[in-house]
Image (tube, rainbow, N blue to C red; front, side):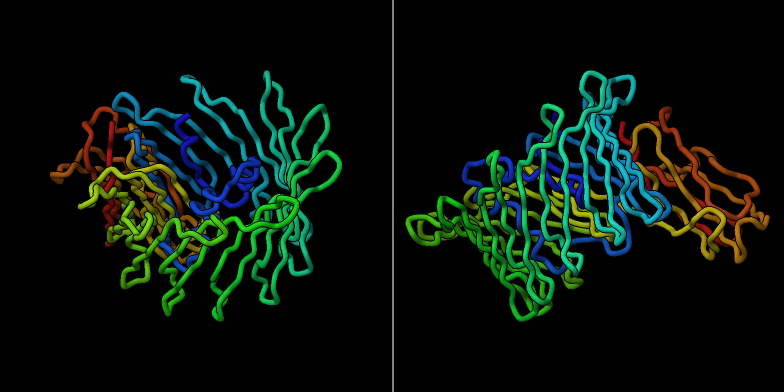
Length: 457
């Protein structure tokens, strides 16, 4: 499956998938590759919007589209994955999220497309304590049409509600079997100092690896130090970080312990624009006596916040398109998105409102970015008509929502009627139209707003 070449990381859902936890081999390269994002005070997040859709071009030129739909609380409700095959987008995966009354994830259902319908193949279930801390996460998998336990994570917390430990167990022979345990310690500021990983031998917990973190005077991460257990703790790897005066991570130096000394392996240098948003990531690798260019990722932003990230490769003299690397960013809700072995990522954002049925007062017109975008052949448009009283009071205004082509010619009228003040959703079907750029315009009274959408067959 194409999706296995990278992960889309949301908090907790794929927490257990770190490959270093499932291998007894030396995992120093995994450490060096994947620990960058945790060190930056700021990265290239869109500060006011949520990710609407992402088109990823992998290093083998395959294209994958990720679509995100949110509920009115701004929580992720549905995730879709589509693959671009035979000049069209084909459904692949669908994840559906449910939340409890406190807005915490209650369950996630994972489905795959079988050419005619969605078929569930995995589920996650969450349990919380009275403080809202997750204490249990259970995964179930469908086997011969029957849902079976697969694995579980159980969590404990200290008096400051910091994770003290978690234990990963697998389901085998109708019982839970210990597999792995992580324990954490913190300093007086609440910053993580140690992460101890132990593996279950069948009788007892045995040391496996240990990470120790140290911080500078600004409480930014200065050094990550990794050790392996071989009857005693032995050096494995370390990451050293430097920052600018605004606490943005400028350089990450990655080293391995080889021949009884620290040997440099890779250096990542970050450049930020005037808004302190990440714009260039340069990766160099150490070869004998000097640093050599390896890859360069450039992040560019449109006025509406949409982002394009491109990975370039070094041919010895020039930067060329078509490189392969990791592209990472987060949205306004601090959801992290990490794509591996990719050459290009296009991110489309949309704004969300805090409208909750009949209980909230609407004070402004609102026209959402259509989702998905780009789309084929249908897309959804949401809009709101404001009023200074609650939605239960009937006040109406004439509303039009029209579609135009790139030449400004009206293509279709989706709405042209009196509307009660409130929130509305409408679907646009472009199956009879050619691929291209289209515009949709919402107009009511003196208000008018136009947005762009892209139809790709």
